[in-house]
Image (cartoon, rainbow, N blue to C red):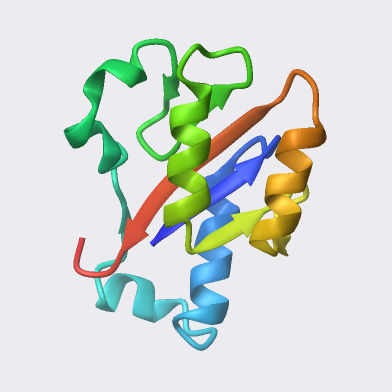
Length: 119
């Protein structure tokens, strides 16, 4: 699953909580039982490694600043591939709202992370 956020400081806890609540019926034990985990890198990197030159990769999430030369590539990817969009408070929002927040913001970051079962 791909998660995209705007101006969210740390995606790990938010995404973990979202998955437990929405995919695992609130059962935290299923996280380990089903071997959920975060990808170290976005799968996009396998397709276009050059655009990752100036982004921050934490091992959980990829953080892209609005001033990044390749920002549009990441924005377009996130707009098409994201399963769950998050605002700066870590609350789920609709794709259209996320896009509007990105287009209307100045000097911001988007963060992307991938997570799946049987990782």
